[in-house]
Image (cartoon, rainbow, N blue to C red; front, top):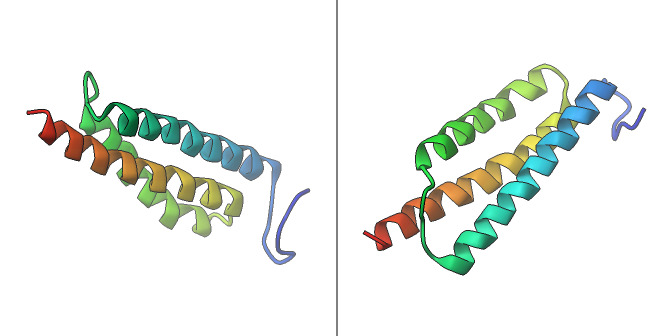
Length: 97
């Protein structure tokens, strides 16, 4: 099993979840780059972005309690990307009003 510290319990479920979280962060980055390129918000509600951002912050608290460190690292990617995307959605959404 791939673990970065011996004293941390690592399991394949955590590794897979961490990979999904990390890929999620990458795919959110694609939305950020598109928004930065277009500088317009059309057809996107900020509500779901805020919901998943707050859930991501919860996961940053929750994953360490489960000793799921790969999920925590992937969760950081999702939270950072969602936070940036949320701010940009509000910023460009207000500019277009």
